[in-house]
Image (cartoon, rainbow, N blue to C red; front, side):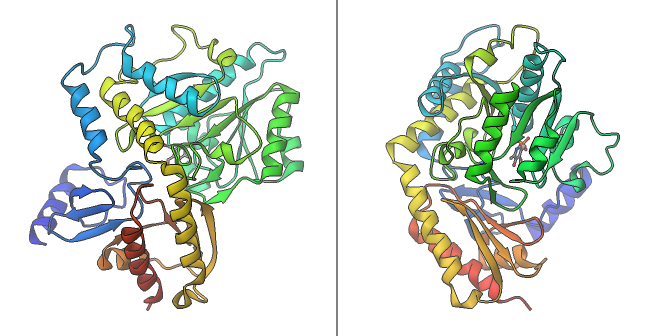
Length: 397
Ligand code: PLP
């Protein structure tokens, strides 16, 4: 423990304090287990905000990374490399026919998507440039993405806001119709809102989004930074809905924990992004691409979409039916292993009490416990983590 506090002190001197870091130094992990520097073991039910979708140190991902690291590290995007193409081919196989742009993060993928929608908007008269997004949404922390994000706390202090971004309530058809005018180029939405507290887009509203976009030549962007790559029991969250977006943005899980972002667009849109319009020096790095490509292969080979669905149904049922949680949980929402359990009352100490018992969870939107374990988590580890979580919730002083 002394060692950890020394490390935490050193961190305080040299790291910017923009994260509310806990005084724990993580040392190593395997699958859904993580150990801290003092040797304490945790069951990881959050996978680093969903990034470690196949858990820690998956042997296939280690092999993909090390094989590629021994072959080619980085070349400029003035050249072709196989891993980029192989990943884009997998996206074509699993999503709709499209073309990929690679970057490092979710926000960059969203920025690229909005830029592309604006390029398309320039071809209309009057030119379309405005963007509609949803309250409670989260799209990243650049100046444009905080303008798109539907959470005032994320915007505060960075005014004036980038112009052209409006938010409406999810599932509010009248507001949607009013918010979209002749100058609207894009609507961006998460199939299931993550930071906002695990709120799924209603099927009817998704259909309305698609229709208004088709009718008014607006680009429909689905931000799948949280919901992509199997987390919801389908490869992409939109596949639970009767609509296909024009652009899909990915981050977090697609790199398995390495920095990968993807803006994936229908070919007719993608063709507008010609040389000089957008770029990312290290985007599409061969090592990251080799890992991302392998994630799709492991999900397919191990049928992890069905597995995540079954594990998620089990977890949701346990949280709904646990007698110790009666009166403490208002609602359990989510799909597969993207789960939100809304508490009846705020519980600021819950994450720490869970950690003390040996389980990593997250709380978002003040009262929603968020679970997003690796999608290959075993039943044994899932149940162990849930038991510790239930105990932590029930122990509220
Ligand atoms: N979009 C969604 C839905 C997110 O949840 C996040 C991050 O949490 C982002 C975008 C931003 O991703 P990144 O932190 O990789 O920039």
